[in-house]
Amino acid sequence: MAETIETLHRRLGLACSDVLGTLEDNWVGLLGAELASHCVLESVRNQVLVISVDDPAIADHLKWSRTELLGAANALSGGENFTDLKLKVQR
Image 1 (cartoon, rainbow, N blue to C red):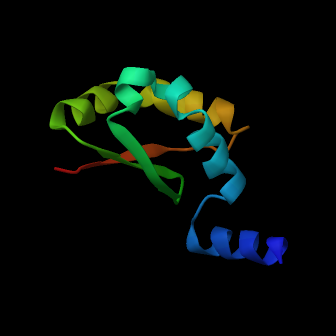
Image 2: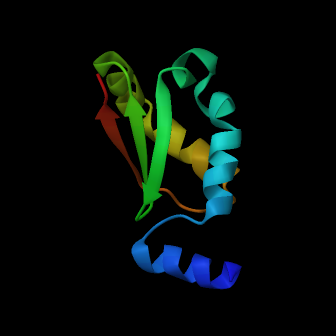
């Protein structure tokens, strides 16, 4: 069953649940406590991290930190190779 779910995730362009869990478990370490309190990892689709933020200034900060954040997420996930961020400002 787990193998079938992982196959379905790959076909839909979704990250496997282990990768999402690892990122969520280390979210504060990736972003820092202050920044993490304003951000929610919504999903990973087609190697893009989809993150909701509660302030446009936070979105700008993440855009400026894109390279570092993607590098840290890739290192943490064991080479999942995230290629971009999609930021959603939720008000």
